[in-house]
Image (tube, rainbow, N blue to C red; front, side):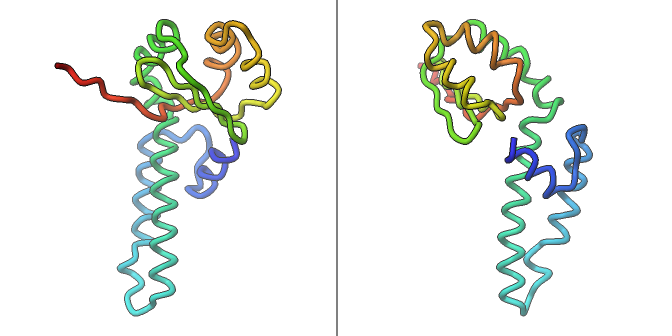
Length: 150
């Protein structure tokens, strides 16, 4: 959750920002912090490059968790969490990453450590996740392994 809040603060948006608003704010910030505006000022140029990278990262992250993005991939997400088995999982600072057997991985944000401990100690992690994690926390597709067709 800290990551989400930090990125929203950086772009100056609230949780209700839609994709068009994010895009407009992103473009304006990138114009403001474009390195070419700092010609002759190496220190300012370096700061602008760093700030630009951070803005790009924030924009792509917030787009990935936007309601419109989640709606577009809802059917695929539902199929994955209901029919594909959990292959692996990792937890770090309230972010739970669950990897599925189909090669996809999803990040869940704001997962308390106590819930993670229950998750790893349950005899049926997929069932536990369906009941307590999948619909309870903000998530995004972290990676999707492309399956090659022979």
